[in-house]
Amino acid sequence: METKNKKAIVTGGTRGIGRAIVKELATNTSYKGVLSDVAFIYNKSDEAAQHLVNELKNSQTKVFAIKADVASFEETQRAISEAIEKLGGIDFLINNAGITRDTLLLRMSEKDFDDVIDANLKSVFNCTKAVLKNLVSQRSGRIVNISSVVALIGNPGQANYVASKAGVIGFTKSVAREVASRGITVNAIAPGFIKSDMTDKLTDEQKQKLVHNIPLGKIGTPENIAKMVAFLCSDDAEYITGQVFAVDGGLTM
Ligand code: NAP
Image 1 (cartoon, rainbow, N blue to C red):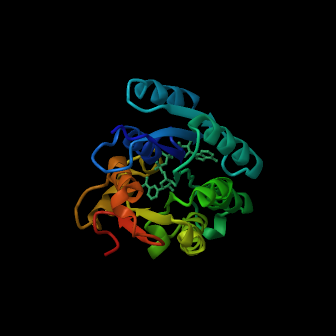
Image 2: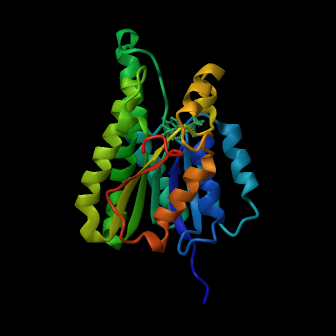
Image 3: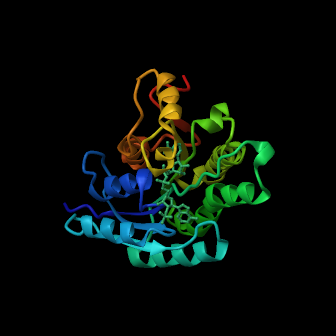
C-alpha cells in the first residue's frame, strides 16, 4: 500500500540547522511517518533558498521556499496560508528561525532586545497560531520548537537571546497542555554548540573554551538536531509531549 507524504513547514530553512531539518524531513525513510513535502520559510537568503529547492528536486517529495519575516504577525499569516495551500495541508510545524544580537546587558539597546524577542519568540507564537486551527480540526499534528541549552543554564552576553529561548520552553509546555486532547504534540529541542553561521561568528578562543566544557569533546552538527526533529515527528514519538530535549554532547548534564 502506498503511504502518502506528510506535510511540513520549517522556519529558517535556508541555512544551518533549519536546512538540515528540511533535508531530513524531505528524505527520511528510517522513521515511520516522517517523509514529508516541505514548505520552508526564510527571510533574506534568496540564493540559498533556491539552491536547497534545486538540491531536493529529485527527491520523492515536493519542497517549496516562501520568503517572509516570521517576526511579523501579518507576514507570517500570509506565508503560512500560502504554505498550507501549496502543501495541501499541514502535519508538522518546526519553529527553527532565530537570530542573535549578543552583548552585555549594560550595552544592550532596546532594539537588540526587541529584535531578538520578535525573531525568536514572537515568531513561534505567530507560526503556531497560524497552523493551530488546521491541526485542531484534523485532531493530529506535531510541533517542534528549537530552543537552546542556554535557556536552561543562562549565558553572559545573551540576556535577550536566553530570555527568548526560555520563553520558547514555557510556550511549548503551555501549548502542549492546551492541545494534547486534540492529538497534537508540542516539544522543544535545546541544541548545544552546533556548527552553523551563527556559531561561526565566535572567535577561535571562544570556540576552544566551549568545546573544553563539552563531555563528548566536539561541537555538534546540524544533522544531530535534524535527527531529533525527525524522531519527534515520527509515529514512534506519539506518547511524548511538553518535553525539552537537550542535544548538546553532554554539556548540560
Ligand atoms: P543560522 O545558521 O543563523 O540560520 C538562521 C535561519 O533562520 C536562516 O535560515 C534565516 O533565514 C532564518 N531566519 C532568521 N530570522 C528570520 C526571520 N525573521 N524570518 C524568517 N527566517 C528567519 O542559525 P542556526 O545556527 O542554524 O540556528 C537555528 C536555530 O537553532 C535558531 O533558533 C537558533 O537560535 C537555534 N540554536 C542554534 C545553536 C547553534 O549552536 N547553532 C544552538 C542552540 C540553538 P535567512 O538566511 O533567509 O535570513
